[in-house]
Length: 384
Image (cartoon, rainbow, N blue to C red; front, side, top):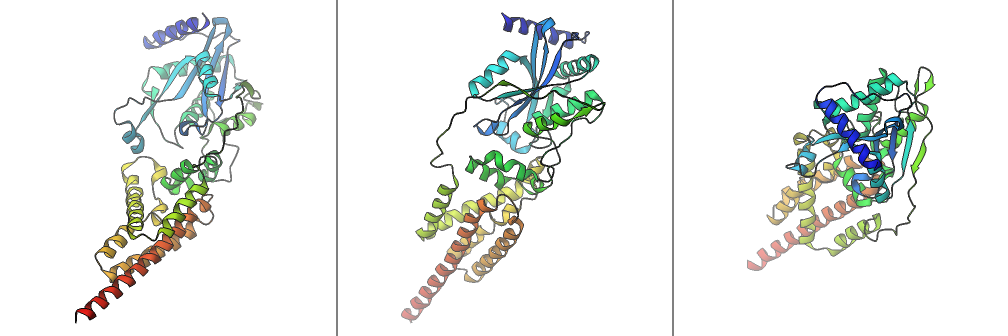
């Protein structure tokens, strides 16, 4: 019955807003709070989640406004996500449904009630409802600049008329350093993210874009010299489950795979490896021109995943020893520059196995070239 009443209240709010009627008034006892959800084990949930809760017991109202909604049925979903023009939108539904979702996912929920005046609560509530039926409902998702957390931060600051909520943690760290611990138990996801992200994530992380950081900032945020939010309370405590360490998703399997590649000494396998890394390098160099995600621009990982590796393979099979040598030297120079750039990055250790593998395989191609050249010379002499 409680859920049914909530849905009727939601319907009332939506109909009122859609006809530009007077917004539903909140009672003086109404509470508006920020919900911070614990990170999950799936890729989409690794960084947690932020939402806004409006609770008014006098009206039996308990609604969650969620800025992290998207539709998998969107045409060309993945292409739009890569391009950076995928539309996310704000949705509203009963808190009971929101709570049950996190019970099912076994993720904790923390709440910080905002200490704002009744007029400010009404203003924020009205603004949220207006957003549902305006162009503001949809927004272009950006991993750092515009997500479920930044949208809530902006909405709160906008309502208060001043920038009360500001970043207070990890002020001396880059975005890459901030993100790295979130992925420590997901090696290949971490590797993939660090491959595709370029120069922007190595800048100082001054944007408040993660749920945990938002929760920490709210602990000290002030308005009129008073704390903006109450201390966090736990609404849902996840059951701690110790998952066995993955047998494949770890640094050791990555190193073993590269070691097996190197010791194989198979020309075709080396060639396939360089072709794949070279094609990936072309993607890294060009995706920044296609995508609106600034995180993908100026990706120095193309020095490792170097498109010129394709020339190494091509000149080797064409027996063009002169240009093979030039291509190998060029790649050694790129790897040297890459090592200098990567040296103080948190992902340095991640990429060392690939750097060493590339060096060994480049040397191997030079040896293969020498053997092939000697073989051609012997063949010529025997024919004479």
